Length: 237
Length: 237
Image (cartoon, rainbow over all chains, first blue to last red; front, side, top):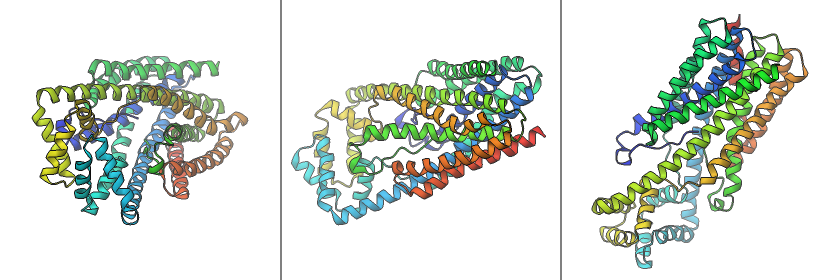
């Protein structure tokens, strides 16, 4: 859901691991803060018993974190299977249809504005090594990068934990009050502050304006909570 | 959350629009079917009043669909801003540090296995056109594609609507019964069947085994619902 991008490209390789974890935390926490917050807000306007808000909130955290982490894990596995099936296809095409694949390489160099003679020389040199050729087709024709098998598992874990941590923040005020609206007021204050702070730091990852990002993230939370509150109040009336 | 990939690369350009809409539907509907289903399942084990399950479910659908669609829309806008700020940076670096940028182009060709003389010829020809040069750096150094401004808005709409449609499926059985557990039984049957069917067709997009994909998607829903049910029952006891 969130754009994966690095703050400054000259540091990409240096900060790769750190920024992957941060990306996972951003993905998990932005949904974790937003959806349980909005659900609890919605119920606060429609339900008398605060315990019900807590039960629904925790059920949502369980459902949302599992859907995101397990869903992400299996999507990662699928991406991996897809990569290797496409790689096999490329090797196969290089064997069976070398002229077609060679032409696809030439078209790539043509697109870069190279002259016909340099295109042909570059093609000749690149196709000498079949592994490099297949790798080239994967990257530049299909836009597929080799997936890291450990990454899917780690990423699922990070996203799931971030969702749970994020989700417990908007829910926690309801533990200390008997009054849903009172809980909502504290929850809204705490959560919007967290979303704002979180958006500010998130901008470091995407390389955009921090205040603008902070406002955007808090705005999404406020709109989601406001709509959930209004709709729940309407149907419970 | 879902791997964006196309079924067969030789048809990528033909099917682009169709597959973008399908990708949006897959993203919105897989979460829409899963999370409201699991939340309603969780509440079925903990709450007597079916109306509360419906109110919570609808509040969740409102919260989740807004968080996903508005979140996706603003993430798209951020990606767009990011693209243009990086593009300006590339033009700026081409003006200020042409030797460094030229070396980065050479290293790219070196990585393809080209000989030093072809590397240099290719660099000379590519850097003749500054727009092409900047475009090359964006694509092959940073891995950034030019974003479509209309895409973010359409995608947000598609994802939001799919989430709402998906979410109403697991919730609908509760409209017709007074008994939460009865509602859960029908909801589980209907939703797991939908997830299974949905996973089967989703595999057409990702190019993986249809039955395996169908089982995976249904499995995520079942696990999420089972955990939400167990946890909600535990804390409400």
